[in-house]
Length: 119
Image 1 (spheres, helix red, strand yellow):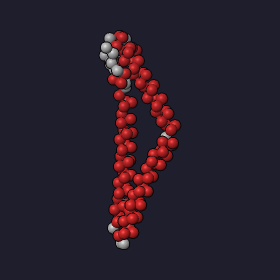
Image 2 (cartoon, one colour):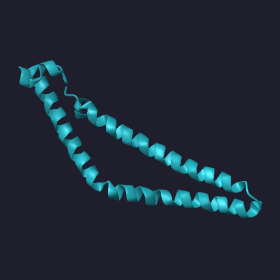
Image 3 (cartoon, one colour):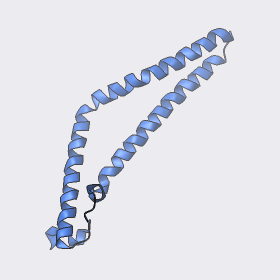
Image 4 (cartoon, one colour):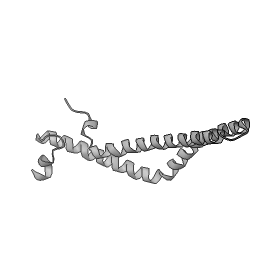
């Protein structure tokens, strides 16, 4: 019975993806908090009807600009993303092949002391 290739993937490639996902959630939260704080700040002024409308408008503009911001980040990071993707595939292939060779030689998966270059 063979193990799935995901189990043989090098762990250093999982952390940046998780960190990037967390950073996106943090950015989204800060973006929404900024919009909410700006809306609440505008609500404190008189006349209330005008500022209440302005606060909703401000919040709507902030929330509507979020997809545009994400599209801009995606377009500027396209080159870096291609490099990251290539590095991920290279590391995945290396980890997978290393796991296969370790299994064939009887070494435990990911064991540096039993790797092919030291045998």
